[in-house]
Length: 113
Image (cartoon, rainbow, N blue to C red; front, side):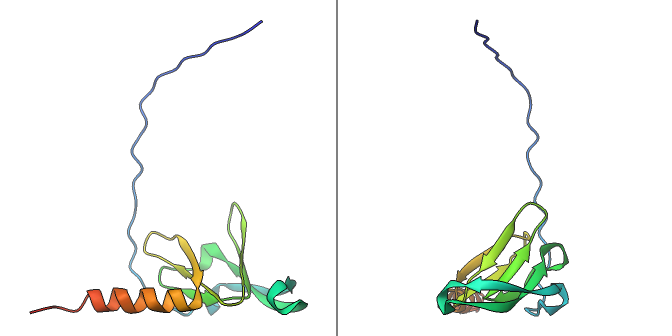
């Protein structure tokens, strides 16, 4: 016995909301500190746990840290920085790469005459 199904339908184009980027301080989103294994340090360590729903665009945090979202748990390792962008994506990058990206973005906004 076999079945074949074919369907067609209209798909709505997603709407993206651009939010204003605020300050980097994300301490307001810490909900609790938890003990977690930190590979780079090969030890259990108390790390901050952040609620992603409380984070705002522009907020940044340095690892080690844990971020709880409605659909997953993200680990920010030591040497990484997690930053919330204007679309409320959490971008995780190496600390030096994040600093370079911030410098490049700031420099590109300089008016050239």
